Image (cartoon, rainbow over all chains, first blue to last red):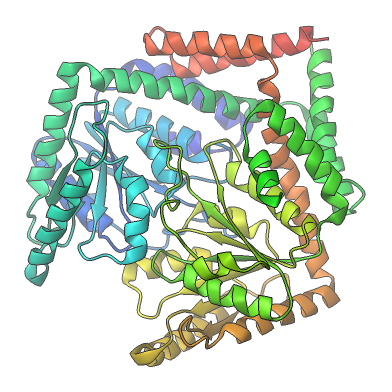
Length: 313
Length: 313
């Protein structure tokens, strides 16, 4: 059922969008009772194995876990880049876990809007912990940070120079860094990296939450650091709930979401105007024939749209 | 001047946007006379050093090179994630090179629209080769593919499993793969990877361009493969110009751009309606006070906007 509901919100079909909107309106009272955790890290850091170990530990604490993977879609195949890989095999078989890639698509505000709605659906379905996993570095992380309570960055010990270059922007968003693969010969390197990152994080300004970012080491093999990660997040939740930051942050996130959601509504709304759609097809033809520039066509379409709206009953 | 012009199109200020739009309209006749090359690859693959060697080689062929880096912005600092690193130091000092990070920002259609306009400005300024560099994997690549003539994927020999997982989606977009760091002890691995990727690419369906994706090896240290990469791209340009695909592809890209550009205009247009802006601020306040849901607020704002438009002279 949850899977079907998420498919509905992911659909770009106008009728599905209308139904999806009604669905989200109806479940909104049942949402909010979860901790939302964003987890990111470069390819190869071991996100899937970490989330699998972490998810199984949380389920052991009598909680239900949902994992939403923000998955950059492949434009050409309309499939997903990671879709051909079977991931988190054990966790996906657990009846207290729900795992779902949420294709970001190429619609405006695609990542954020649909993932936010998927979070709400998971909460209404009774999941206590919502993990939003992102792949790679960049815009998805910024979007995910804006929709979670706690943002966790996974890092490898001894990563290269280029990785260090991207660290600052992502690191300043992180509530915690977990150094992965701290097992066997790698334990020493992981400990060194832990000290180094902990030092680096001290150089950032104190965050509004009053929380000082923590650096842990972990191993998905030996399960070291998994329980500690959960304890840390629980401590964060307790501390920020008491200070009021936790709920303030969510309210602020919702307010920011309005802008994005409204832009999304505007675009969806356009599909209802068949005249505008026809005009766009005609203008595209003129662009292909090189008789009209994109900028000129855009302005024509805007004034056409405004005229249609004015005449609309 | 070119730098200032790009800053103008990057500005989100309504007056700057109006000026930027006029500027692009005025230079449009002087655009199009370049080859637009997208270059991507995971962090650590050596994009900067490759582009530096490649750019210097092209300048040696009596051409002017512009490099636009699509740079995911840091939401918190409003700076750019990679902005703190000095990159392509030598190339940036060359008077026939222009290097510019184009911050993607967090506006809708941010990456594509502004980068597309920056490409046009570089062309009007007389640059023969426009390189659009993207960082990481995912949505930026899809956007960049939609605005370049040739899409080049840099890869490392012996990359891990997770990297192989993301390969398919990005690889199917690539017109060529260049294995980097093929020097010293790494030459053998690079050759093996070359054969492997060449085989993998043969399994993809033939592209509309009629071009079979090529795999080369290169070293930014020894400059091996740099001239070959340029020759390959020249060959692609010749072949697809003769077949008509080159210009058809650009026309189709422009037609797709219309949709995005129109959505961008719609959002920019909103800033002109102070009533709508005021209403949004009021609705955001209600959301923060938890007296209104984001979905309900979005719908209220849409009907408010429609009413304002109807009454607007």
